[in-house]
Length: 208
Length: 208
DNA sequence: AAAATGAGAATGAACGTTCACTCTCAATAA
DNA sequence: TTATTGAGAGTGAACGTTCATTCTCATTTT
Image (cartoon, rainbow over all chains, first blue to last red; front, side):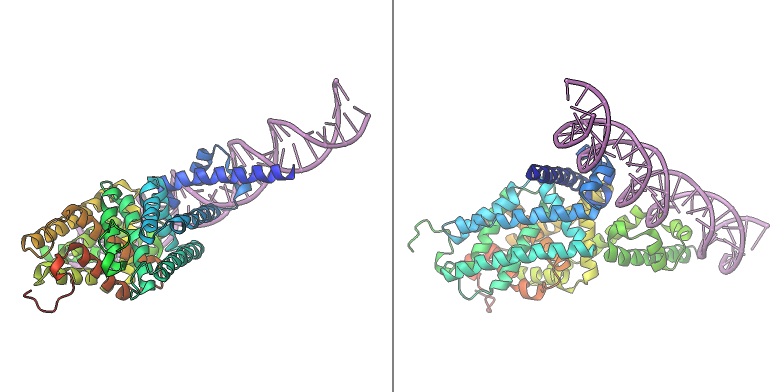
C-alpha cells in the first residue's frame, strides 16, 4: 500500500522527466519554458512543482537518468569476447542507435554544463564515471594483451571520449551526417592506434 | 572624410562585437543580457542599438567574423610543403593556440544553431565553407599522390571535422583536457587512415 | 542650425515560481 | 447504507523579476 504510493510518485516523476526531455531536446534548456513542459506533461505548473522544486531540478534529474543509462551500456563491452568487438558495439549503441532527440539532449547538457555550476558538477561526475569505465576497459584489454602495451592509456581514453563527442556533435549539428558511413573509418583509425602491429588488419583468422 | 566616418562606425561595431564575445563566452547567449554587453562595451543600450538592430544581429556578426577567420586560416595548409605538415599546423592553430574563450564561443554557436533557425543557416554556411576547404585540401593531396587513392574523401572530411569538434568540446567541457597531449595521437591516427602504406611511419627522409 | 552621437529611464512581454483554491476518493462515523 | 471527514493530487491566475527593445532628451560635431 505504501509502496504503491511511492511507486506512483516515482512513475509520475518519470513521466514528467520524459516530457521535459522532449521539450529540452526540441528547444534547449532556456527556450523551453515551464509552461511548455507543463503542457507536454498535461499537468498544471502548481502540480508539477510538487514533484520537482525547480527547473534546474528537472535538468539534474535528466542528467541522472542519462548517467545511469550510459554506465549500464558498458556491459556491452564486458560481454564481448574481444576488445575491438566490444568497442564497436559500444560505439554503435551510443552513436548510431540513439535517437536524434537523445543526442540533442546530450549536446544540450554539455552546453549547459559550461555555465551552470551545479550542472557542471553533475556532468563532470558523469564524465568521470564514463572515463573510469573506458580506462578500465583499456586496462583490461592491455592485461589480456589485446592491444599494444606501449600506448598511453590515459591519452587513449581521451581520444575515445573525444571521438564520441565529435560524432555526437556532428549528428546534432549536421543534417547530412551519416554515422553509418563514418563509423567504420573511425573504428579502423582506433584499431590503427591501439591494435598490436601484427593483427592491425581486421584479420579473419584469429590465431595469427 | 566620408571614409573616416564609415571607418569609425565600423570600428565601433567591432568594439561592440568584442565586448559581446567576452560576455557570450562567459555566460552563453541566453544568460548574457544586453545590459551586460552594454556594460562591457561601456555604452548605453540606446546607443548600442544604433549599431546593431537586435541581440541576434550581434550573434550573427560574431559568426561572420569567426567564419572569415576560420576560412583565412586555411592558408596554413596551402603554404605547407607537405600535406600532413599543413594539417598539423591547421590543427594546432585551431585546437591548441585558440584561447579558452574562443573555443567556448564556438561551442556556444554550435549549441545555439541547433535551435535558432537563422543562426542555423549561418552556421551551416560556415560549415559548408570549411568542409569545402577540407575537401579541396584532401583532393589536392590525393592529386599530388600524398595520400592513399582508395579513401573516400567525403567520409574523410567528415572524420576530420568530427575530430575538430571533438577536441573543441573536450577543451571547453573538461578542465583537465590537455590538447598538447592528445594532438600527437590524433595526428598519428589520421596518418594511419590517410597515408600511403609505405610512408605511414613519420619518415625523416623525404624522398622515399 | 542641423545632424549625428550618446545616455538612461521607460515599456511591455515572458519567465519561473507561488498561492489559494478545487476535486477525488478512500477511510471512518452515523 | 449513507454522511462526514481528511489527505493529497491537481488547477490556473497572479507575482516579482528579468530581459530585449524603444523613447525622450542632452551633448557634441559639422
